[in-house]
Length: 130
Image (cartoon, rainbow, N blue to C red; front, side, top):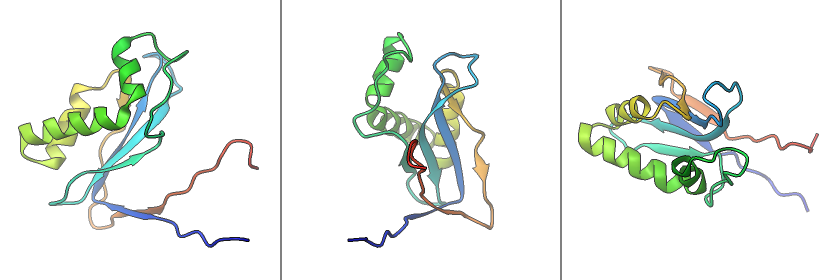
């Protein structure tokens, strides 16, 4: 039996993508989370890794980043909440998160979408399903 799939839409005023760089000079990264926001609303997290995290084996020997990879949901939620509390603003909290953590955690510049919010169904192309 074939089921109808309803795509989920997300709509942001601005967003950033955070990836993990196993090596600082690496051109390959592991996308972890898309963080976006709408004015006067809480931030949105679009997780690109499972809730239980990913294994740090063969990615890093650094215990700090191994912990981040093991539980990224808790890590990013806690860090961003702290920065929002410090700045009093979701936008400035995200900017502070980016400024304080651009190392093995690589963030794209915050993309502001002005009058035209980002609307895109979440689609995933799985390896080996071609």
